[in-house]
Length: 366
Image 1 (cartoon, rainbow, N blue to C red):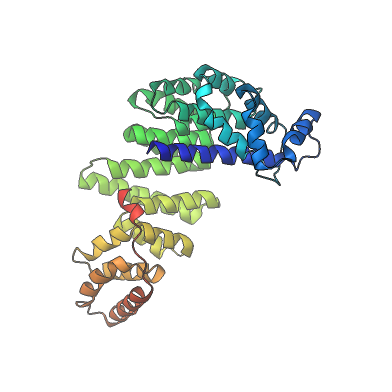
Image 2 (cartoon, rainbow, N blue to C red):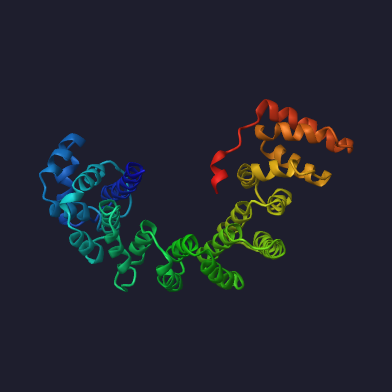
């Protein structure tokens, strides 16, 4: 698990650094220092660069990477900085926590350099409670928002962090708000739902990021809390209607997609039904929803389905045939009296046997 986490973080760091170096080659007005830095590495192959980087002090390693990321815009060659990322993480034990934190707080460094150092601190301290030192920086007004986003993404939060995450959500309308509410939802779904409910009650005046985060937080709350059937049905119905209102009226495609994903993630009979029959939802998103809800459809077939229930499943299988549902649909088909529905059912079963895909198991733990 730890090895997997390290690989993921290293990959992220590599991608970030790679994007930076690439920007250098497309910039015509680079400073003299940046041009000199380029020439230092540009004409060398990867083996030579790795050798040269090993000879640098850790301070110079960071400074060189930072120099290549400070004034740049677009990328053409994306390979030069991969060795930088590899060397930084190989030498993580050479860096003191205080040194890493100093770079993260020092805004003379580029935001990307600071984000890389957040990743470095996370890897270096993954088994150490001192990682909480990163969370302390979230209270500092001088820390850049995009750096705070990286800190929030990398940090673990608990019940004592509710106020911190709530404040971060209030101070921003963008990615930081989205990430903060997501983390709060994982930590305390009821507190996140309180915020989400307020945002969604006036969603037209809120940012797309805040609305999207609130939709996800509401789904989390509805799925993870033990509510009585009547209360749950009422909240779920109101939430479905809200999402349908957004889907049917908004001109913001990103917000529309967020509402469709929220409906799908709810994983209920009512929500998948609304997605399938809504003509304003693209087929690609309906395919996604059927894939995500295949176990919901299977459950529908196993509980004395009505003809309307069977028609829902048939429509879903016409969109995306899933072989896991063949046996259940075959049993149900034996008692269908509606000739048109029976024909559609038999036609879709034939296609499911020929072209059906296995149910996507990744949704079972959601």
